[in-house]
Image (cartoon, rainbow, N blue to C red; front, side, top):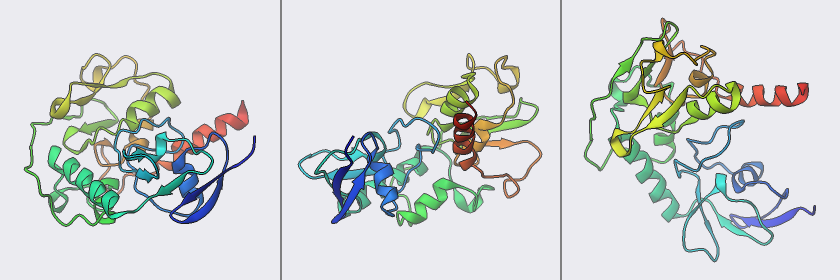
Length: 235
């Protein structure tokens, strides 16, 4: 099929049919923030940080869920988009207990890097400060729900890469939590293989290996895409 030609930030760009806008934007060397997207996993368009403006459409569209089309005119960094992205990151900080100044994950957190990227200097919303538990019932890993941003990268890595679907999401709004099996302590899960792929995919310090400080924790989310690519070559 013929390549698609579109305009991104006033530059003519060629893209492959079936490619997402996010892929085309990145191949053009343009950086836009993402959080729920992780190479190797399916996209869900949950975080909305990769929103873009498309000429002729009133609504902003998530680049990770939008396919390229011929003649598309896209803008990735208008004042409207910048305002939305900062607002999204502020709301993420307000919803849980993310306080970088006293957080042991400081310096090893994608959410923190996003806050710097969008120019967030303070949070304009009231902190909800929910009562979030820390589950260290698993012999190798732990999860601190205070630092979870509900990106579901752990859920998709467990389902799509490991194939066991130990993780899922339960509840709504501020009560939403990632859960293991039937909402039971992680250590009692009968499906978890202790592979650690959920920990690799986690963008914050929410899922961590026990006995390892956050500074020592290997942040290697790119290994998810490497595993997927290696399986394609093998099979």
